[in-house]
Each structure stands twice: as structure tokens, then as C-alpha cells.
Length: 111
Image 1 (cartoon, helix red, strand yellow):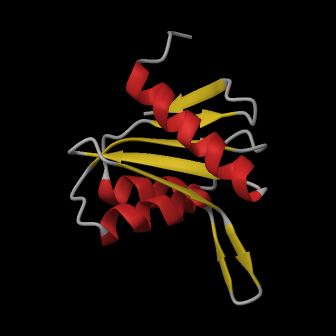
Image 2 (tube, one colour):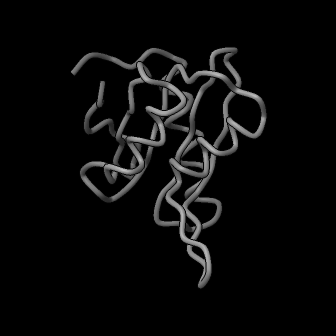
């Protein structure tokens, strides 16, 4: 597996930090077309359940992003749910999705 560029390493770090700060099951971060980043964690309330990737995409959209350059998720799972991938693709059809283990090790990249 090739070495991550600095910007991709940054969004994995942001996702890890968000997850660690709240103790959430997942952390995610996305980078929009202008280089702005948005980090989020999963939400697990009785009336609202959202994955970290969906929250990060929603934050980007609500801030005016029109495209995503990349997305990252830090999770125990091997791959994100299909609906999480779809959410990223809705905003960033060509954005790679970096899937990392809780220790930050890149597991795979979904192109």
C-alpha cells in the first residue's frame, strides 16, 4: 500500500481525534473542494442514529461544500456500510474513502 499524502493523513488524524474525544464507535472526516475539513462522530441517540461519515457529509453540505476531495472513517468495521459510501458519493462522486483502524492504520481505500 502506498504512503498517504499529508492531506489524507490529516483527515485520518481528525477522524481519530473526534472518535477518541467522544468515545464514539466511529470517527470520520471529509475534505471539500476548497480544502476545508469537517470531522464528526457517529450519533447514537434513541431517536437519531447516524454514522460518522453521514454526519461529516451533512456538515460539509450545510457549510456550502459542492464537492468532496476525500473522506476518511476510523472504525472497528472492515468497511463502511453501503449507505455511508452512497452518502459520500452523493457529494463527491470521485472522492476516495480511506478506511482506517482505530490506531490510524489505513486498511483500504475505496475509489
